[in-house]
Length: 110
Image (cartoon, rainbow, N blue to C red; front, side, top):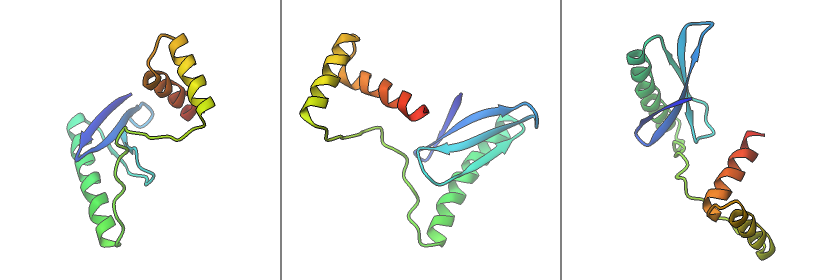
């Protein structure tokens, strides 16, 4: 899957073979923002228009636009969970950050 970035927003892009069009979706926010284009140039323009339109619509309706996830996550867990996670990370030859990223990504796919 490919991604695009504009104004701190990221979109994932897929090709819809049935409709012969590229389809993009903003990721990292709960609001649903989708755009499409038949060419890469159309897709890029639609992406920028969608982000700008999303921000403008939020302002118009008095809502703060959602900010994409920063990639920084702070968790508070019991020390026993912390120790077990650290042991699992070490056993897999990864840092706790690498291990937790892999585990969270797998859990989020479920």
